Image (cartoon, rainbow, N blue to C red; front, side):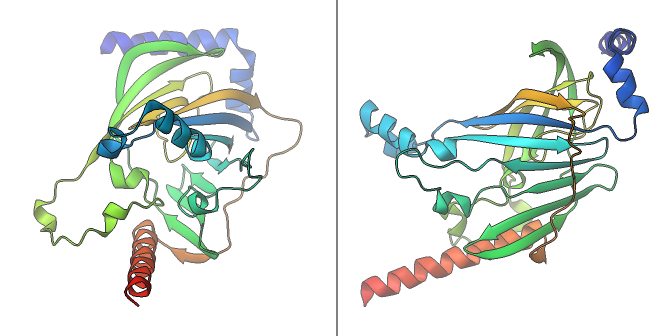
Length: 276
């Protein structure tokens, strides 16, 4: 491990000598940039999928493409960032995925210095402003390295509570009426693998990931991989990085409870209409 960190120090010094933009980055207080990401998720059909033909699986995957493949932009400076999804229009129907949008990640603001998260969420026409602390992440630095585009990246791994990765999402299994002793509840964890570059030494990354000594260019968690496809440093037009400010203020836990209560109400109403 000591040898690995020695290599990091040598590499960092060589980058500072040979790469002038990095030196300018450290000295220039108004440093800004944009990183473009795309995400890919594998479709999980469980036991239901085992009874389907390959043609049926492919059809479902095509129908859910807007949910399985997404594109994002991370606008950042040395301490702050805005992470936002680019909205896609369905090529066949010409409409957006209105159901999926209720449970997708909204515009996300992170402030690394102040340990602050502000995320704008809209749920069935109601606006919420989720304010909370950044998710604490205990990274394990690995010795592996690889190149992503023109950037040398190093590997880091961690485990994060699964519900913290998708607190804005919803699953019908969330409504299971089981009484569980919270002290004996085993928290489900998701293994995360990230690749960061010291050539852009900011402690930021896509989605809720942060805390490494360089910008995170790739991250895999569960069945989803987020990969950076392009980086623009100090674009000509100044980037306005500002936290969202519209909506009912709420915490992550309160927002998740709101979603679950609303979906339970909808399910119960549907059940009463069927009986009637």
